Image (cartoon, rainbow, N blue to C red; front, side):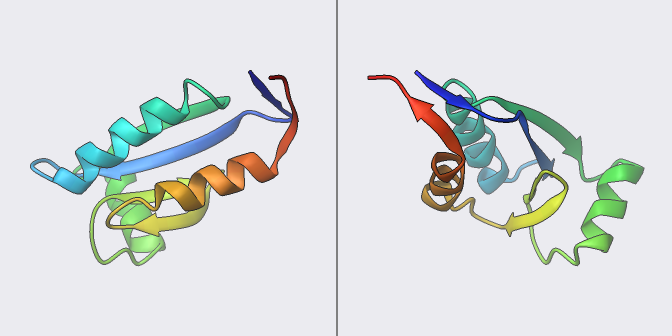
Length: 94
């Protein structure tokens, strides 16, 4: 089991009928089993979703933010996210 110094918030702005969005949600749910993640799912049709898309000038869905900062748009780079989460791991118990 891994322990980390802080709970990370991942914001997922998704759209209906978006397979990249569905894939990203599945990856984030899986990562949340290993890392302390709070997954904030926002529909793109909602005012907050539209505002986030405009603020980060995302060209496609999903928009993914890590602790409020732009992380990715489109297909989620899962290995890159895992690498960032691993780099912040305080300790791992085998």
